[in-house]
Image 1 (cartoon, rainbow, N blue to C red):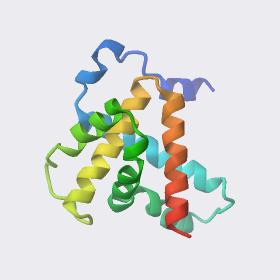
Image 2: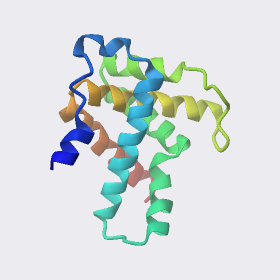
Image 3: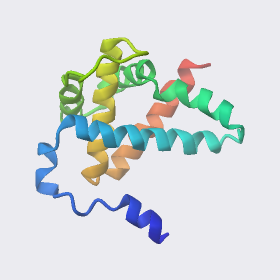
Length: 143
């Protein structure tokens, strides 16, 4: 557990300055967190072939999927959460995405910024609520 504690330790990030962290940096963290969340969820389904796990994870983590998720979540988010998404969405990508529509990519960046923000803000209960809703949204869309 000591290694996990070190990996997940973000105590050096000042809680007073979280709103000053660039949305692209929050998205960088959020991308990794969401990918890990999805992978762990999929392993829990009993699938053990990595090729199938990868194909299933794409359903959740590709830009188009994240754009769908964030649009469906918007009504249940707080004003602050929607503001974080807007800030992330308004970041102009350094290079255009290769396999995604630019608007989907921008919405996905906003979604990832929200995930990163909730994590570094120590709002883990809210983060888990939103992540669980993501599973519900994608599950409903794939049935």
